[in-house]
Length: 382
Ligand SMILES: *Cc1c(COP(=O)(O)O)cnc(C)c1O
Image (cartoon, rainbow, N blue to C red; front, side):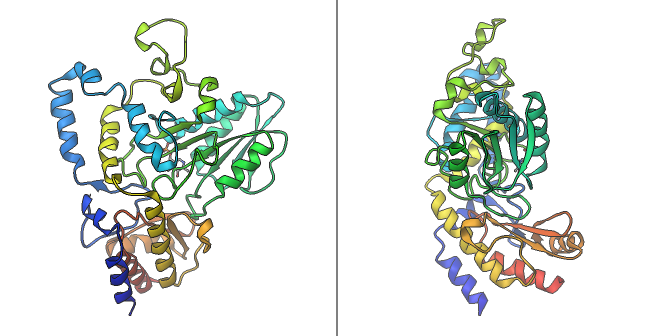
């Protein structure tokens, strides 16, 4: 019965054709694209050209002739529409951890000095909390745990929130929390690691101040591909980076001892970009041509609904669509051992301490038959 339903859902899926763009095995259900996205098939040939020709033959000339120097802002402009941002607002480079630092310190530097608190969601991905704790100490503020949705008061300088909780898959209310922060006179920094490429974010529409995010999860940029940083247009001129480097200088080749920041999102750059990773990311973004993030979201919800219907373990991922990202997290005794068995049976998710089985649904390459197979194998194991 449900097998025919999965087949019917796959047949009606307008994104089903995107799967052919990725290197995947027919006998593996890959539900870990929220940790490392799959490889788009055309990327190896593009990288072979980057290495053999752009690096091997053109060498130093490639900074100019192959567009290496401007890659961070050019690739930022390709990510921007996926997260609802305008061109010129987003720059790619460094890790998410480093960009959390840049964005949060810059946000606090814009806040009134009397505001002495930095709110960080209490269940944040650890690196954000570590970085925020250090950023708060450096700027003479106090880091305070925040439950997304709680009131924000007059002592708050900035609020750092993970758009989707990495462990539970809970989607936080970005429009409402951003509006509440602004109402209280605070700035917002959103971490989009688990929402960029998975659902509409609407950075411009909701007037988010700063945002950062991964590109190796739902954006399939490759292991350790550089993160992105969004700076709202009206904050760009006052963005005071705690990591000013020669790449964020108005005249990088002037080699002057004093620092004059560049205009625009380029100000968020630091040093020489990691070109190989960056160009792999750029190539991987071709899979988004002609794909709308709304269609991705619709399929993501249909997939996670379908999977939730089939599984019997307790879900810690909210049932309400407005509160769900693109993953399903199930509570399971001995989750670590169960995940090992699942992987041995060709169902690849991951395990998060202490008792969570995590399944990421990347709509560009996961289908309904995959969800069904994962649920069936899981049922046999628990
Ligand atoms: C994956 C993830 C990160 C990873 O940061 P890196 O600097 O790339 O290691 C950070 N924050 C969140 C919320 C994540 O999900």
